[in-house]
Image 1: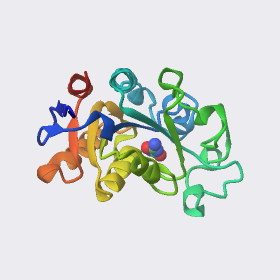
Image 2: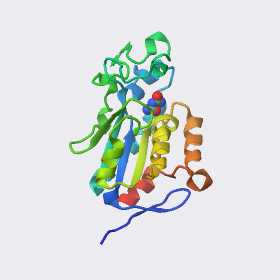
Image 3: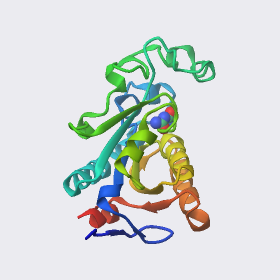
Length: 223
Ligand code: C5J
């Protein structure tokens, strides 16, 4: 017997199977969330992202307790930048560029302190960590194969930023046939109106990219 929980979401309720569902936590990295990181060097108020940490932590604990497969992503590049397209590297003031030295090591470089996931959301053994060179988690990564191997069909998605890496990942996933449920308060943006409109875009037109819920309703569906 397979029990199908139901999550209350917009634009409709959605049933899912625990064993075929993953939680994907996008780029909750020190470089984006902590003072002195890449996000702040771009002129952003990083405290706007801090609001997503507690809901993401609660969601992660519920997902772990219910046996959902947990995936963490990190945006970043190899130290020699060979996986970073020139068009990406060119942007930003010289000191804020990817690969430049920052207070938490070279900005968005794998292995540097700023590239790491924040302490409160550290991955556990058995959870998948996807290092991605792009905004979407499917581009140039093993995510698609990992999901297929486990028979995953539904993704709860949260993280930062709502309109950039969360949105790009949800669009990639939607085109690949995954049902995506975006957890609104466990996402964050440096630009509050982009957060709001980003979530609205996902659930508009009958759920054109997926579903939107909040951490309370997501956790209730898992427990
Ligand atoms: C950005 C991300 N915003 N993780 N990255 O550059 O959304």
